[in-house]
Image (tube, rainbow, N blue to C red; front, top):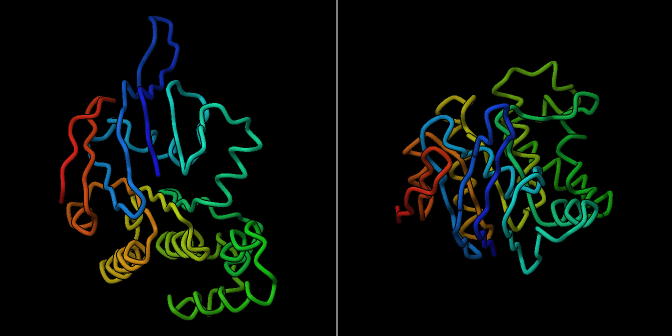
Length: 224
């Protein structure tokens, strides 16, 4: 599903170049569940945003679902992202002018799911995560944990082929965190490929493989 070849990202500074990622090479198969781990500043979130097609300013090769991402123009990258990926952001990234219902509905609209079917899917998700009472609220009216939960529901509601998550349970209490990770496990068992950035050994234990980064370099990969 994913192959990276010599992927690098750097910033030009006065004294030269600062490399965030260097010579990243790995493959992620369809149906894998991978955790990216490492100390702060290792390049974990940067790598995840490259995989999620949010960052186009890098060098190397990226192959996703048979597409050569590194050669695609921006419009085609965006179409690929909307059709195949879901992303859970560490800082939520909910749209402030949309309600909880509308935020969750958005990825289904991107996939051209009919309106009645969208309504059924969103209502089921609201009920399953006990947030029916929040459906007409805006993000500013929610706590941080509630926003994180809505972000997770939004990313998973369309059952994307590739789900990427940046510290997906960082602002949730333990029961909610377990519920989210159990959901990830079920999605993975049903065929969704998952890549998460996490500091949590518990969360990493839900996956099948760990990729470790240190100072922008790939340190090692290991089976869980």
